[in-house]
Image 1 (tube, rainbow, N blue to C red):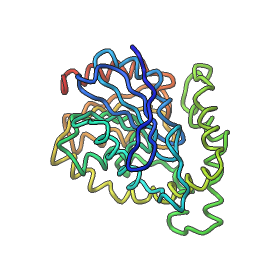
Image 2 (tube, helix red, strand yellow):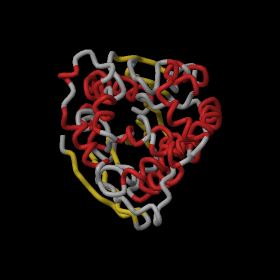
Image 3 (tube, rainbow, N blue to C red):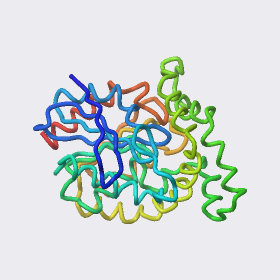
Image 4 (cartoon, rainbow, N blue to C red):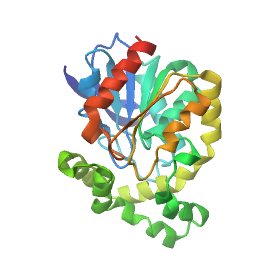
Length: 286
């Protein structure tokens, strides 16, 4: 299994991505979350690439993808989805399953709503689209939504601090010594780049638009009934288990599973999640 590290031009924006597997086989598009990048899939890609074509881009402002200044690029989830949608077209992905995690969920679900015919299956790993999946940890962010003052914006800067990254990686993990420091250290490096803090705060403000879109996404799920695997770190402090169970309300055939981990469940359970994905994908996409 060989992973290639590539960059392509998407309407003037340089998008970095990882690619592995036979391109003639069914494609799985992996969409990362905050504050990470496609490196979060370093253990999952080998689990899938023997049977599937795997593509994992970095979102604009994350990882190795270009980070245009805020006066040249509007950092909203709608724009992130627009770039990733065009990215799939530029590299020639006509149909694909999506793996959505955290920020990857509002990006991936927007792709599905816009082009349901392109989506062969959905794997959501702590990628929420239900109100019952949102925990109390979002309270400071919701305060910023209600009153977007400089003071409320500054109150969120702690979300960008290394101790918060550490919390995201290790909270809910039975044995934190199993979590490599490499991933979170790289995330902290990307967060520390000049201007990235303001980009991330813009996205935290815009996240309210994702919540407003929940009804639209749920209607898509009810109407199109895509195959859904919800595999969740059950100890996630941000997106809690009821958000996983809720998928069965709109897609009764959804396969809902839990692993004994936290938000970044791949750090401890990549083999288990990879096996669940292979079992699921072979049934639905071949």
